[in-house]
Every structure is written in structure tokens, then in C-alpha cells.
View 1 (cartoon, rainbow, N blue to C red):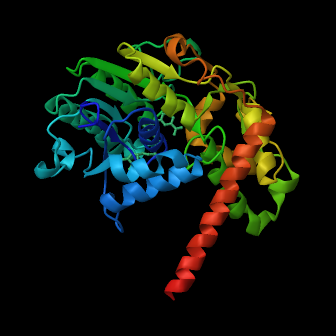
View 2: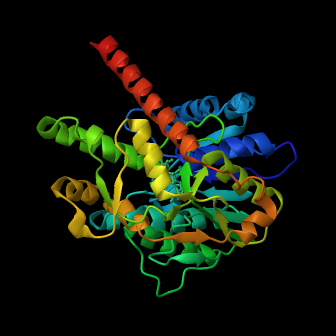
Amino acid sequence: MTPSGAPPALVTGVTGLVGGAIVLELLRRTDAEVLCLARDSRREPAVRRVPRLLARMAADYGMDDVADAIATRCRVLPGDVTAPGCGIPEGLLPPAVGEVWHAAASLKFRARDRAEIDLHNVTGTRNVAELAVRLGAHTFDLVSTAYAVGDRTGLLAEEPVPADCRPNNAYESSKMAAEALAAGIPVGTVRILRPGIVIGHSETLAAPTTFGLYSYVGELNAFRARIEPRLGNYLDHYPVAMLGDPATRGNLVPVDRVAAAAVRLGLVGAPGGIYHLTNTEPTCLGEALTALTGALGIRAPRWVSDRAELNSIDEAFNKKLDFQGAYMLQDKVFDASRALRHCEDLLTVPLGLERIGEYITRYVEDGAAEAARARRKAAQRV
Ligand SMILES: NC(=O)c1ccc[n+]([C@@H]2O[C@H](COP(=O)([O-])OP(=O)(O)OC[C@H]3O[C@@H](n4cnc5c(N)ncnc54)[C@H](OP(=O)(O)O)[C@@H]3O)[C@@H](O)[C@H]2O)c1
């Protein structure tokens, strides 16, 4: 119980980008005890891993004010959402929970991983929902994605996905199924929260993730390393051609704004239904990719609309971007009227070329610092 006598909140996905930020925001904005459902890793039990990662996120986000609360108000529930009852040992189950935020998911997307993706995102949601009902939760917040709308383009409302919607990949189809399942959970309020493409913290720019915008960094660096032995610094001198339309909009939204909006909807008692936690100021992908390549020190891409215009190097690169490929052609605009009623101040974040470049530079620097730390650790072990 919290000092106010309210039952604790339960959050899944707490070691991840969005779930971790939700926990920190709950610690800042409420006096709730926060139950953090998380898996053991191969090297570290969840009870140690969760406070360590949350403390690191708080430091990275400049949230020193919640550092003590991580130790005093977070309780780790070791579990796995793919297991019945989420695999939480009976003796550790709380008598009751209040609001549940379900952010754990697989962000894989390839068809070959469909069974695993569905297990995590559909069965996982069912297991967390059953646990929430069993523990008497009054509210269930499913963290979905604004991109669970398939290949539709244009203005997209905060509405259930139509049955005839064609998903772009296995991730989207699992999120659509999870949304449909969540809508029927028998608790007082079910909110489906759909963030855009989540980027780092709006002030510190820190981003503990490799997904979304940052996946381009990984793909570009891997591609550069692959072609270097044969072609040297090709990418520094020649713009790689990308199949897509640079005017296509991508909805980038900082993680702290997503978490703050998610928690605010809970605090104001927003009614159930779908909420787009998206930026009212979307970014053109051409601009985002120019900023990104600039920060990596390579030439900005050249955009083409016809596959025939790709040379063999471009072709190899575009193949690597198979996940992002669809999003570079499908212009989606998210109507966030319902979310903006409560969170307009949080969800308006102008992001120009320069600012996106700063996000990427911070990401690259953090990666380099992390690699140096890992090398030092390995050297100490020898
Ligand atoms: N990142 C984005 O751009 C974005 C955009 C829109 C929506 N979303 C949605 O936001 C949610 C969170 O995404 P994210 O970016 O925070 O992903 P993330 O950083 O990869 O975090 C995923 C979290 O889920 C946990 N998890 C995965 N499988 C689990 C299992 N079987 N049992 C327990 N925990 C499990 C992970 O734990 P481990 O540390 O143990 O792996 C991790 O804490 C997802 O629903 C995603 O679809 C993300």
C-alpha cells in the first residue's frame, strides 16, 4: 500500500525504454509503490538488474529527484510475460494492484520470428491482462504503437484498427492482435496508448535503445563496416540512394514526453480508449536521415522512387532496411485529439535537422563510451 492507502501500480517492460521511463515518471508524480515485473538476465537476477538499470536511466535523464525512490518504492516481481501467471512465484504476488502499465514486448518484426513475436506480444498481453484481473486492477494501459495501423496512409484517428487493415510486418500484426485483446479486458478502464517512434529524453537526449530512429545508426554503421574492405570510405564520398519519399513524415517523440503523457492520462482519470502519444510536430524522413547521416559523418542519402535507379550497393543497403522500408513510403499523420485534450503541452516537441543531429550525436557518443567501458572491464578480467 502507498501512504495514501492506494494499491501499488504494476509496470512491465521496466528494463526497456518506455517501461523504464513510465516507472520513473510514476515515482516522480505519485506516491505509489511501483511493482516492476522483469526477467532475470543470464548474468543478473531481476532483483539486482532492475534497480541498477532504473538508477542509470534516472541519471541519464537528469532525474536525480527519483533516485532514492527507486530503492524505497520499487519492488521487483521476477517473472516472464510469456508464462502463465507471468511466472511470478505465488509467494511474491501482491494481494492487489491498482493501475497496470503493460510495456513489455518483442520489437522483432521479421516473418521468420512470428511465433516468438506473437508469444511475447499477444500471449504476453493475455497473461498480463489475466494477472491484472486476478489482482483486482482498476485500469489496464497497454503500450501499443501508432504504427499498428498497417499500410494505411493519411490522417489516422485514435480508433481501433479496421479488420481489413494489412500489417506491414509481424510486429504490427502482433500489436493489432494485442490491441483487440486488450479492448475486452474486464477491468474498469482500458487505455491503449500508441506512441510514435520513441527517441531519447527531450532535454538530456539520452536514449537507452537500439530501436526506431536509432536502428538506422546500427544499419548504416554495419553497412559501412561491410563494404569498407572492398570499397573503402565509399559512403563518405557517395550518397547512397534510398527508395522512398523524403517528404514522408515520421513521428518522432521523446521518451520522457511519452511517459509523462501516459502517467498524466492515469492521474486525470482519462476515459478508456485509444490515445496517440505522438508529436504534434512530425518530422520529414528526408530531414531526419540527413541529420542522421550528417552526425555519422557520411553523405546525405539521395532519394529515388524507382528501384531501377538503385545500383548494387544501394540495393544491398535498401535490403537491410527492410523494416523501415515501408515507413519511408507511407505518409501517416496521427490525429491525437483525445491525447491532446490532456497532454498538449507534453506532445508538442519541434525537432529540426539540428536537434535530431544532436540526438544522434549523443547516441553515438554514449555507444562509444559504453564500448570503452566494456573493453576496460574485459581487460580487468584478463
Ligand atoms: N521504441 C519505440 O520506438 C516504440 C514506438 C512505439 C511503441 N513502442 C512500444 O513500447 C513498448 C516498449 O518498447 P521499448 O521501446 O521500451 O522496448 P525495449 O526497450 O526493447 O523494452 C522491451 C521491454 O520488454 C521486456 N520484455 C520483453 N520480453 C519479455 C518477457 N517475455 N517477459 C518480461 N519482460 C519482457 C524487456 O525486458 P528484457 O530487458 O528482459 O529484455 C524490456 O524491458 C512496446 O510495446 C513497443 O511496442 C515502442
